Length: 305
Image (cartoon, rainbow, N blue to C red):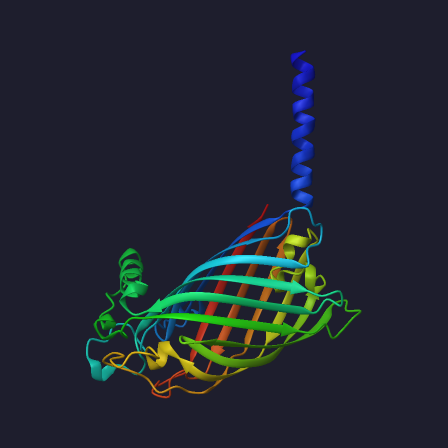
């Protein structure tokens, strides 16, 4: 009797594990941006970003046309170097942006992509930029950041954004081009953007691809390089201009560069519930007061179950 029960238990467990492997419906992803990943010894401008994402789909759908996610993140901005101690040394406003958001990505029958999101967050001291950067630098034995005394004043922001990408190449094999257009409206960020991603390698269609965070729909392996040049036209950026609705924005406020060129290149991989993205992103000056442009790296990985 015990042997029969043990046999049935093992069989049931194997079936459950096989089903879970074949039909994942949840995913956790960590996204880390940092200029130190470029190995150039730089520590400024958009200097650090950390995002935690929980993503899910309808557990009853083998290939869901809707992927949802919630996200908690912090983006951190310094001047050219975080060690400046004098206001006159700054060339970009100092702040962090702490936010929580909801995203939904929908795929049509033609495999077009429509994604939208809403978020709330804050700049200024409640975004905990000073505490996080000082803790990181202390842990790694680096210099103590000194310019947070000049950070932007607090403002809570609400933002909504969308992204649209038509499925242009129907019978793709190792090559694909994805036109992408989108925009953001809010008192933290307001802009429109357009670009096109070029994919080379082994990838799935849109509704099953890690490129669109839809690998929950597939256990098929993906491994591809991509180049994604993007043009962003900005109407407002609170991390540069300070809070939209406050008069005292801070001791140092930048001058918005309304046209931002942002090419990104990288490699994405997904297989059997694991995903990874390694990328480099270049940006010209977000603030016209900046001495230099910026380059930062992204390391992202996640797991599905």
